[in-house]
Image (cartoon, rainbow, N blue to C red):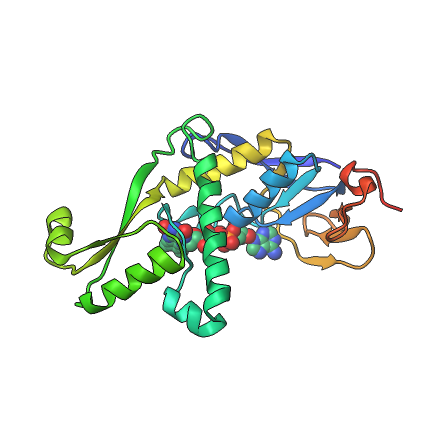
Amino acid sequence: MSETSTSTATGIDGAAVAERLRLSFDLDVDICVVGAGLAGLTVALEAARLGASVAVLEGRHVGWNASGHHLGTVMPGYGLPVGDLIARIGFEDTRELWSLSKEGADYVRANATEQLIPGIALSEGVLEVSNVEAGDQLISRLQLLGEDFETEVEGWQVDRVRDQLKTDHYFHGVYYPTAFQIDGRKYVHGLAALARRAGARIFEDTPVVSMDPSGVRKRIVTPSSPATSISARRCGGCRRRCCRSGATPP
Ligand SMILES: Cc1cc2nc3c(=O)[nH]c(=O)nc-3n(C[C@H](O)[C@H](O)[C@H](O)COP(=O)(O)OP(=O)(O)OC[C@H]3O[C@@H](n4cnc5c(N)ncnc54)[C@H](O)[C@@H]3O)c2cc1C
């Protein structure tokens, strides 16, 4: 296997001072992650922390897509209103998903320290405001979030929201005292740095063009040269000792 240095990403928020490497020959790893966004880097970090050999293949560069542009608001929930989620999958499953999202926020908090990611600038509390008058829904929303979904929330009346934000544009608000704000760009590059430090190897400018998932050794192909590929040894869900130790499974 060999690596080609394609550029040096110096000065990207401090945390990303690392050679940008492109994969150009065969590589054999336990786990191959495709995409160096928040999801892929989190998987890579945790797998490396557990002792797996990990390669991340990123078509452009770390945080190239949404993960490099997010606003850094970390709070429970998903990219659609909780009511829509309930309508789609039902109350109980939404509650379970909500609980998972709280664990996700706790996970980010554990990484987002100044020691692990210098300059992450975590600040406590997130205020969600409404730009339409819908105060009548506030009570039921607080009840749902606070009681049913066990999330710390405070209802803010219009005056308090306007006083805090110094504008009359908004109406009521829901304040999440345990949610927080971080520098989103620093976080994704910090995750990459943590993953590298844990032993994961991140290859950029290395798009995956095809995969052959059959068999124990999964073959993942990139276009840098016809021979470039990764064989990932980790068979899905397998907990056999041979996999954990990195030995080739029978
Ligand atoms: C403007 C904006 C603001 C946001 N603000 C917030 C916020 O404040 N809080 C919040 O929680 N969420 C926010 N989000 C959502 C959040 O950013 C995304 O949910 C999250 O970044 C998704 O991460 P991901 O790793 O799944 O995907 P991505 O960030 O899209 O990463 C996928 C990576 O895979 C790579 N890739 C794709 N195909 C291949 C291939 N074939 N080979 C190799 N690499 C490949 C891409 O180049 C990319 O880098 C925001 C999103 C946007 C756009």
